[in-house]
Length: 97
Image (cartoon, rainbow, N blue to C red; front, side, top):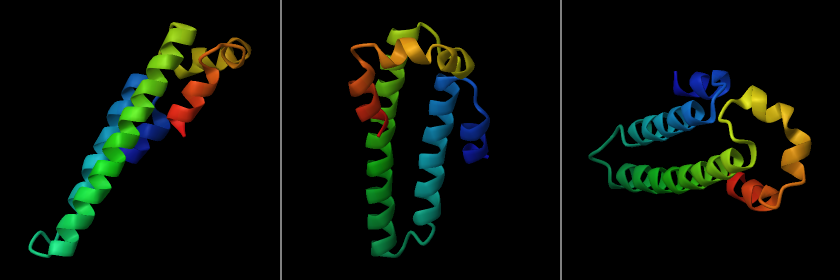
């Protein structure tokens, strides 16, 4: 459900919410055998990586909003020329990556 939401979202805020739901789902799947120490460690490691990645994605979305003034992905794609010539373009791409 969460991954389907990421693919179908036409709004960066909604996409971010589904991204975080995917992080929680991954954590729960990895930590299924909670009595196994390796499972707990792997779950926490995965959760930390996805949370920090999600925060970087959120910063990238904020930069994108500053550049375009919208959270609608369809409208953002229409402003591609404006975005690639903006001073925040490279930092935004780094945050996305």
